[in-house]
Amino acid sequence: RLQGMVNELEENFQNSVVLPRQVYRMLRHQLREAVDLELLFLTSATTRQVPVPLSERRCEDLKWWFEVHEARIQRLIDIYRPLGYPNIQLLLRPGERNFVELVDCLIGKEGFMLAVDYGATFEVLGHSLSGDVGSDGIFIPPVPGELMQGLPNCYSYWPLCAGHVDW
Image 1 (tube, rainbow, N blue to C red):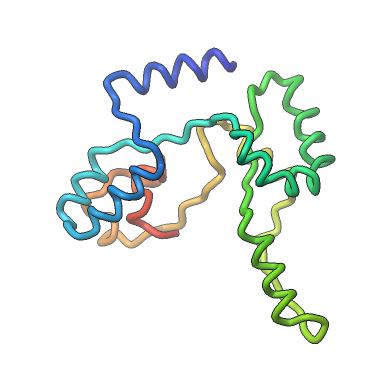
Image 2: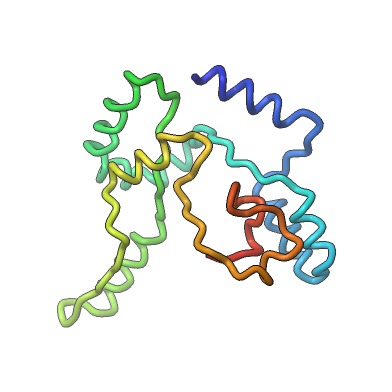
């Protein structure tokens, strides 16, 4: 399975220019000034999600999250490793920890914070992200046709329209 993923990546990246995230972001910000060029770029460029190992620095930054969820992560590994999955994918929003700490500082013991989630468990999110390596688990709600004019089919692969349609 891993070899199949590697072969597919190599095939998809023939005759391609790969932009680091920072360069892509800079380019997208500059293209906002020229709407016609931005649309041309969005319809011509292909955005891909490429799983890569975390750097040592990033692992250190996220150590707290790995420690909090160690047992849950191990359960997912125990499920997917025997099935031949080369990786598991999880959604991590590290800014939430800082937000909760800020709310705690501002409100203290006199109030409370209410956070709303759509209810998927850690394991279900892990499955939805890992079960289909071609999917990142993002559901795209219907978007009015006038907002999609000139754009590729974002419903089949949302990164084609990344940054243009906000869902």
